[in-house]
Image (cartoon, rainbow, N blue to C red; front, side, top):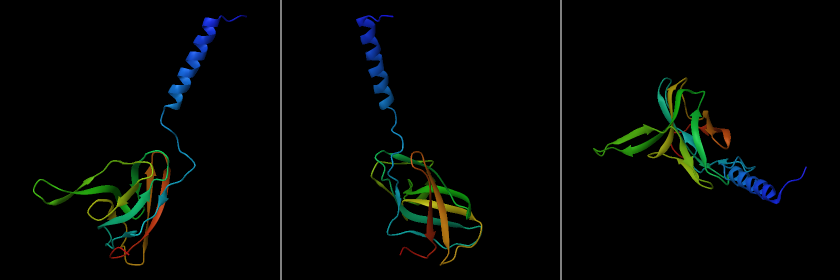
Length: 155
């Protein structure tokens, strides 16, 4: 079976084209794992059935952007990422963030007055000295668990 020069170049061109398309698709998870750390890692004390908030930093050490898709904690009936903002009347308010994009190499800061993790409908009291585990689900990096101390203020 013989192949003409024209067919040969058509096959080579298609192969290069498909390779280019495949390589231009979203890059998958590299071997570098993100860091969950920061100088201010804490959760507010609160009573059972009440509401608390978690604060810490997440460093995306991946070479690609990632997206925080959700958060969970066994300590709360509802766990969500919220963002504080000033409304039209100048009053502070919060809104639920469905997901949060984290550029490659950037730090996602969960802080008072900014993005933070709300722990609502607490299953038990959170008192100083306790700790709370929070799971973060990322599109690229997967799920990470962070253990945070319960304290009345940043350390």
